Image 1 (cartoon, helix red, strand yellow):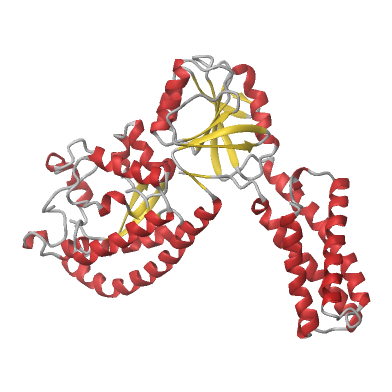
Image 2 (image 1 turned 135 degrees about the vertical axis):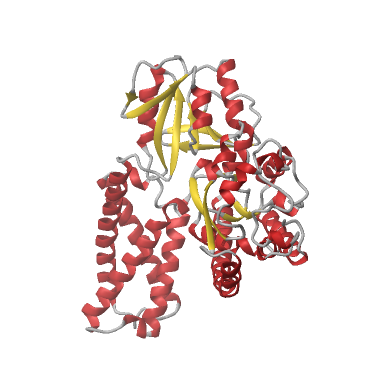
Length: 481
């Protein structure tokens, strides 16, 4: 799932907040110079004016797109832009004071001094922040890793163009030269050359990346086959405009990356608002879940320790979004030697291809010797109480409330490219295949199909629907063995 890059004023919301703070600091300084050491917000007139000023700033900055291309403006253009912004803000403040008939009461010195200090702070802090962001961008460090697939002739120019206007968006981690089987260079523009035509598919399948930038003058069958493989893995593909063909990927959007216009293809594209709401739901759910986990610990810890002395919590490395490893947490429902005994029970695995492990009456579960479903381990698994510590993973951002099941390392090693498409989003506490009756689903291909359906049809409403179904299933004790 791809979160659309922010292209409007929200991309520079940090500058907007900085601008508002600069005005308030200038306003307080002017009031202190005029009236002595006082709290300007203690006066109703001054307090209301400060609030209205912030609203005016937002209106002007958003309405006139003041921060368009701000990171790449020179000092002179920034000078003119800041003068224009300050003049419009102060003009509207004067108009506001005229409308409320308080122009004669409000100090003219405060107005003039505020305008002067506001411009100085505005111009100074804009340039300081731009300097800082540009400095960070030269380190090629961003939130996402990007692989460039191109030709020997185009590689260096393409990398330079991608770096041109990249500020904390992505890190170029490798170049695949698709016009030669064995690349003749180890690096280009300081970026390692990681593969050629002959081993491109192998590299993409073995080494996970977040996104791929494709810049090819012509596409042959091998290139289309590579795109097909990446599509099966639900990878995000940026195809430079001019190279577009009809590829089997559901979502497409046109945007700018660095200094290049591209068509971005992904199985599902969501906007910033949707991403913010989903993460807010995760944080709220994570906080509540961690609180409930603490309460459950008081009751489950003694019961687990009495029947199986050892750690109360179980942790294990899992594979998360785009192949990133993280440590998952659960209340321990199995004996201490469960991982070792898993290999002994491999022939009893109900999922025959080994890409998942599921077994009725698993003897590794604490208390299983008392009979099917009678031990503490069976109880906390049947009621899904063992999953509660994963709310910490949700709070840390490694998981989401709703997503796909995170595989273990040995399961992941058996994945084919189309299986890896499940990992194009954050793993979740619950998901579409869980509410479809996870105890009844033993065909891994059916699990993959349900997960890919969730990714393609994702919406906030679908997440809420799955969460409600999960709660109902847990209350009824269904689908968790």
